[in-house]
Amino acid sequence: MPERQLTSLSEKPLLILGGSGQAGSDTAALLRRWYPELPLTLAGRDLGRARRVADALGGATAVTVDLRRADLGLPSGPGWSAVVAALWDQQQNALHYAQQHGVPYLSISSGLVEIAPEVVATAHRPTAAPVLMASHFCAGILTLATLGLAREFDRIDTLRVRAALDESDVGGPAGVADLARWTTAGTAGLVRRDSVFTWVNGPDAEADVPTGDGTVLPGVSVAVLDVPSLARATGAPNVRFDMAVGRSPARRHGEPAPFEARIDIEGVGPTGAPLRVGRRLVHPRGQRPVTALGIALGVERLLGLRGEPVPPGLHTPESLIDPAHATRRLRETGATFLEAADGGNSPSGDRAACTVR
Image 1 (cartoon, rainbow, N blue to C red):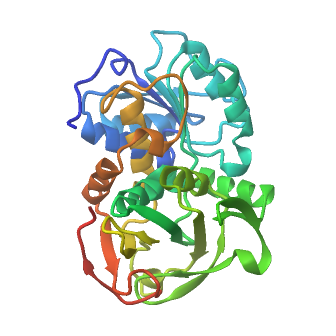
Image 2: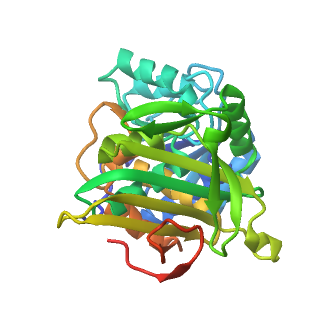
């Protein structure tokens, strides 16, 4: 489906909280590339920094923001087309602000263990505004890429995603704070095992996370929204998401640290025969462009620039975004899909790039 012209909603500025940070600024740059006329307002505590990022984009403005205030410390005016929280909305003031003004809201930093206030706030005002809860890994991109692969199956029995982050690529100060907060909130991972969501810890949570050159990084199962999202979308009784953070092989060789993720799916194909698929998703510039893409795709849907209008209520990335569209956009940003020679069971042995349907 082609992108639409700007709507009356998107003629108002899109407000990006944390717009001068890594996730916010990269999202703004991506949206500017897709929709040159889309008005953007970057909000941050450091007005000078926000102005520098806005000036570099062109056609963007900057404001200061105070997340401790119900009005966010923003001036009154014609309003916004949507509110994007590219940082942790600790007191939920940004969410309540969006609900009060009846505009869409997108968040990326709540994490699985912190979504209760967001869910309850939306349940209390279900008709106020669309709320896109995108606190998935990389704002939902891995879930969408996995669902694109899942279309090859008639039935899925086991689904596993393993992501490898270089220790220098966990994000800016906000990303580092998110990771520290999630670690403090809980150390157990969430898996779906035999159709039951189960917390795992200790040896059960440990995992090997392979990288492209055959290196295996020690990882753990993590409690991310991708697990219930993938389970719900595919019906798979066994779902697991593992993550490793360490020194990537590329950086050890003096090269830029890429983002890598491995997706393995087992089940039954359209003919009724057993089917196993393994792919590696690699982005040479790390997780920043991948996360920004996830946010930008959510904004695109919330503003009605692609797809049907989004109704009020609680939404997740996979409930709004077409996986095929997300895969195309991933490739546009420089991501590559590689096929695992063994169908996904070996941590090494990847061969040339293939087409992901």
